[in-house]
Each structure stands twice: as structure tokens, then as C-alpha cells.
Length: 245
Image (cartoon, rainbow, N blue to C red):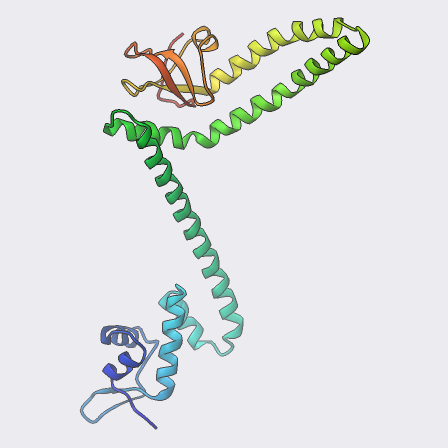
């Protein structure tokens, strides 16, 4: 039966000599015998064992997990559990990397929109990205809360046109004003704004925010810190904001 030195085994399995020595020291690939000169010699079975170890390492299994598997009398009951655990760990790692990649793409896109770049610009974009999910929840609540009014509005218009029932439309007008104010107050308590000039996160007064021109992501406001007037980026309310009453 063929015998292989450490170097020959490393070459057969496409690893370094140091790797073979490391597995020997960790007790998962002990040489079959030693030569008269004290050189480690490995058998064909050792080569097969080494290839299995290398394959499991490529899957990301730890040395301790591989050792546990190799000493098991019934490895079939263990390998399935180890692979399930490793699959879960890899999926979590992929999820983290995908989230990092998504944030990186958002940051690059945000920087391209900046007319004048500064280190504070990164802070603004990071704040916006962090609050993005919470902001979506707030927008979703606003959308759902507006559905009853929309239903009442169109129902009243149709009945006015087809049946001449005008009082339902009047009811919609009467209900809409206080309902809209209450909903707007709730919404503006949930959000804050980033000044593009001084990068302060601030809360405007309800009157200023309610009547300001706005887009889905910005609102024309006067910064309560530096006095800059212009489009400010909307984010979810944070604890460290400058509030203007």
C-alpha cells in the first residue's frame, strides 16, 4: 500500500504543508505511521480522510464540528444536524452581506445626488437609510387611514350625481377637515427633517409643516437651527432633535 509524506499528501489534496500539520496538531488527521527517521507517513485512507476534511472545510464547518463528526460511530445522525446548522449560518451571513450591499448602493446613489459633498452628507444619508423602514410604516398607516375618507368621498359624489343626494358630500367635507388635521398632527409627530445646510435634525412647528410644499421625501421648511429655507429631507423622529414649538 502506498505511503505519502506530508508534502506529498499536501500536493494530492491541493493544500499547504502547514495545513496538513495543523490538522495533525488538532487531532483530526493523525499519520498512520512514522518512518524510522521520524517522518510522518500517510496511507490511502488518510488521503481520503484529508479530502473529506477539505470538502467539509469548504462548506464552512469548523474544525471542532469535523472532529466530532469523524469520531462518531454513527456519523449519519450527526452530519444532517451539522449541515442544517451550517446552512442556517450561511443564510444569515448572506442576508447580512445583502443588506450591506443594499446600504452601499443606497449610499452611492445618495452621494451622487449631493451637490456639495461633505462628511456630514454621509451622516444625513445614513440617518435617512436607518429611518427608511420606520418611515414606510408611518406612510402605510397614513394610506390606510385615508381609505375611509376616499370611499366616503367617491360614494357621496356618485350619489349626488345619480340620486341627487347632496348631503352626503357635505358630510364628507365636514368630516374631512378635522380628520385631516388630526391625522396630519399624528403624522408630523412621527417625523423630523434634516437641514441640507447645517445637517441638523429638527422638528418644525405644526403650522409650518402643515402648509409647506412637499414631496414624498422632502418638505420646504425653515431650519430651526441655522435658518436655512428650502427642501429638507424627511426622516422618522429621533430622540436627538431640535424641536420648535
